[in-house]
Length: 241
Image (tube, rainbow, N blue to C red; front, side, top):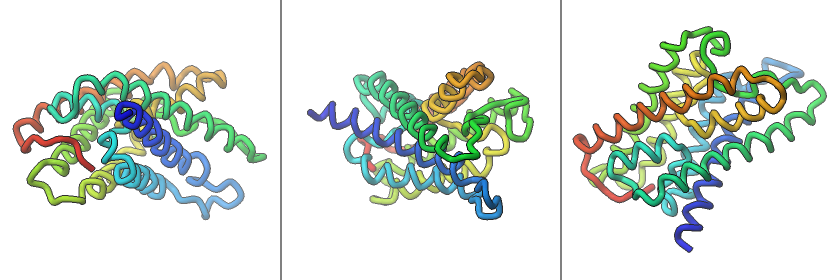
C-alpha cells in the first residue's frame, strides 16, 4: 500500500507540474485575442514554481515530492532516497508528464486559432527560443539542475528550518525559469521535456524529439554531481517536504 501511494503521488505531482507549467505557456503566455493580456515568460516561470511548491506540500510527505527523474537520481546519489524507488519513480514521472501533455493538447486544440508549434518543448540551436548553441544549452541545463538539487538537498537537511522546503524549492524553480526560458525554454526535468516532445513528434515534427537526448543527459549530469556534493555539504536525512 505504501508503494502504491508513493507511485500515485509521483504520477500526480509530475502530471500537475507538466500540466500547470506547460499549460501556462501553451494557453496563457500569449493570449491569442489580445497579446497584451498574456502572462509572458515571467508568468510561465511563476507557474512552474507554483506547481512544484503546491505539489511538494501536497505529496512530499508521501513520496518525497520528486516529480522529476533528475531529482530522483540526484537524491539517490546523495543518499536521500532508496534504490527501490528509482526505476518506478522515473517511469511514473514520465507517464505523468506524457498524460499531462496529451490532455493539454486536447484542451488547447479546442481553441479556433490553435497552432501546435513547439508546444512548450525544449530545444537548442534553431529550436532554442534565443538561438543558443548546443554547448550553451547543455551547460545551463546541467548547472541549473545542479543548483536545483543543491537547494532541494539543503532545504530538506536536518539542520534546515522545518516546514520551508517547499517554499524554497518552488522559488528556486521560478528563478531557474526566469534565467533559462530564453535559452532552452527550460527543462531541468527530463519527464517535463518528454511529454511535449512526444506530442509534437506524433503531430509530424521530429525535430524536438531528435534533441530530447540533451534534456535527459544534461539535467541528470547536473543532478548526479549535486547529489555527490550534497553528501559533503549537508547533514543526511530522510526525505521530507
